[in-house]
Image (tube, rainbow, N blue to C red):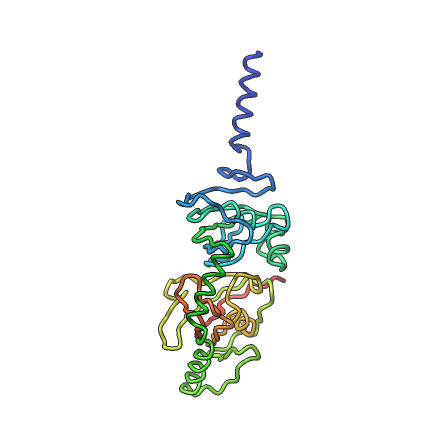
Length: 291
């Protein structure tokens, strides 16, 4: 009897330590409540630290695995301002690592993104975040890289303005820019349903340089972009502004100066050079209202 009792205790300890009874099988759990699963270990051993600039592929999913945002972003890792913050996830990773995290959805949207919880995510629920850490730079390295770029391209700001003006004149564009400098043209009207912050939207776009060369296209990838409108780290400011002017079903062409695109640094991937104006053809396919 006593032997059987001890066997049962050992089995309980074993299954509990292996997270056997966890609602997220295969995941480990931090003291702050984040579930995590490591998929790939990179060659670097030093994890990101507070203040580091990281470049990462981010994929946000509902707890039922429905993806609603997938993009590469470069950003500064800040001190976690609450337990279970997504910043804790980045601080656990080194260059080359890929992991999946399960975090509190309410806190992510309300405290990190400072926006309302989308209606497609239930209150007091969790969400999944897939992270592939492509690069980690200290603040000193980031600033040094930036200074080297600026020395090389310090005259590009005026050059961009000249190129953009020439393009506008050659194309005989008579639409006046917005206050921020964005040129917006409606190609096809929508159904009247406007976009509001917090809405889940689906867009298709083609991105081109002023010379007509493509640099990105969801249409060519056959993968429309889903994301929560108005949230940080989603799209460049120029696209955010343009989408806010559109209706569901509308198609538009926008000319975006670098100040509303990738600025004086260019894109983190190196595809977009610094001080480069861009053209996007956008189609707002669907608006799922937060209301």
